[in-house]
Length: 235
Image (cartoon, rainbow, N blue to C red):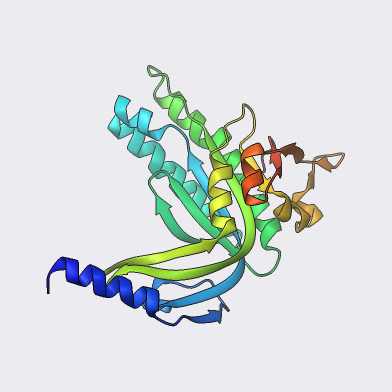
C-alpha cells in the first residue's frame, strides 16, 4: 500500500473511530494508553521548567551549552521527583512535570521555588565561576497550572508517545516563557487558590511569597491573573 493510502485510511480511522475514555487512577505511561482512540482523564497540575536562550549559548559553544542543559535538566528532574511529581516529557532544554492527587498545587509551587534556588545558587555560580573567561547569560523560568486533561497516545507503532490535551500543560508552558527581571516562578490563579499556606508564606516573620499581576496574553485562555515570585527555597 502506498504512503498516501496509509495516510488516508489511518486519518479516516481516527475521524470515524469511537472514543474509549476512562478516569486515571495514576499518571499514565505511554504503554498504558492504546494507540487507537483511547483517552485517560485526570485532574493534574503541570509544571514546565524552561532554560532560556540555550540556542544562543549553543551557537557560542556547543560543549558549554550541553553541560548547562544537562545540569539544568538533572536538577529540575530531581527536585520535581523529590516532591512527588512525575516526569513525562523532555523537550530540548525544558522539562514537564506532573503532580497528581494530594496537595499537588502546593508541591508544584514548592518545586518552582526550589528550582529557582538550584538555578540561582548552584547552577549559575558553578558555570560562571568555572568559565570566568566567558560571559554566560543564564536564565530560566517555571510555570505551573492545573486543570482537567486527557492523555492520549499518538504517533505510529514503535514511534509514539503521550500528549496531554487540556489547558494546564499549555498554560504552564507559556508561563515558563515569561521573562521579567528578578522573577522566575509563575502560577495561575487556580493553582494559587488550591495551595496550602506552606507554599504561600515563608520567612520570619512569615509573609506572602507570591505577588499578583495581570497577564494580558493569558486572558485568551481564561488566565488573566497570575502570581509570580522572586523567592527561593532551599532543596
